[in-house]
Length: 212
Image 1 (cartoon, helix red, strand yellow):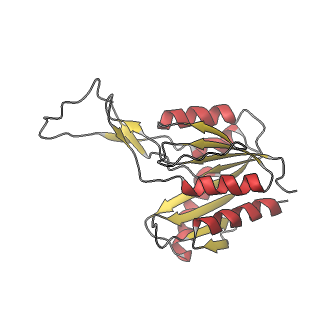
Image 2 (cartoon, rainbow, N blue to C red):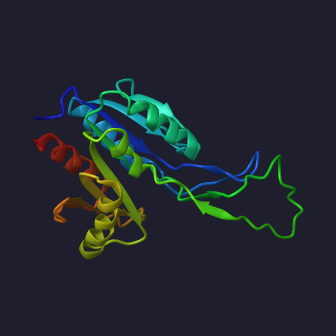
């Protein structure tokens, strides 16, 4: 079938949740993997839209439509809006906040406090909404862990497949120096293993080209 001229939506980067009017909780995601995937898919002829979080090095490419977000709720709103359009696939690589404050502090917290307790509650899992909004879309989910192996990749992927109805799951690790990424299919088979983000982005692009 191929992916030339097909519309593909990619999310990347961290998400914020507010503490007060000036402070946020974030995560360490650089957005690099999602950006590399976007570039590879553009090179393959896809029409790419990238929803990019507050990364330190934003992607700049005139042939990729880039929509920015910072906060969890902004990303959720963007995805809900974009999925009304005719996308072939969603590659949900953003590091979405798992928790948010039960109650956001109003104004700016006084920095002279000797102690500050934050009560966090789980956010809604955005990835579980994607197939509900567009059941026919091809969904690639991502699972980021501190360490991965072939056995752990299958275990982590199984849980995400069950919750999100993804068509593929990428399980990768946090390391900047010893990167490892596994692409797992719905039969719980490791279809690719790569040790660089560039290699993984190329492998995922090739798989999407071959999907019938």
